[in-house]
Amino acid sequence: MTEANLRTRIKEMLVKNLMLQTTADQIGDELPLFGPGGLGLDSIDALELVVSMEKTFGVGVPNSEVAGKALRTVNTIHDYIVEKQAAQA
Image 1 (cartoon, one colour):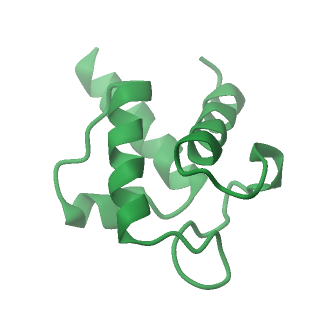
Image 2 (cartoon, helix red, strand yellow):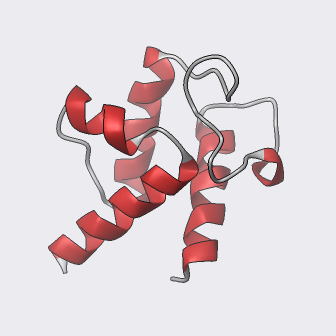
Image 3 (tube, rainbow, N blue to C red):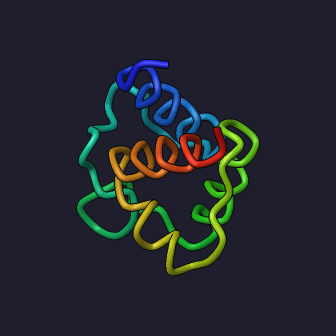
């Protein structure tokens, strides 16, 4: 899977599974997912996101410390998935 395709799939997963009132095309690769000035996701959304990542990409997030680093933007999620999938191969 190409990097662009993976980023698109991540954005589509965010919109579909978190029922966002936006489209995948409107989510920038560096847009903060949590807090003001970004998508404004909260802790419940974070749990949904972790479950969605496991179902969609087969990649788990072991704890909140890892989640805090991996779930900041589409780019950080992308890098985390690529790293974990490479480790599983």
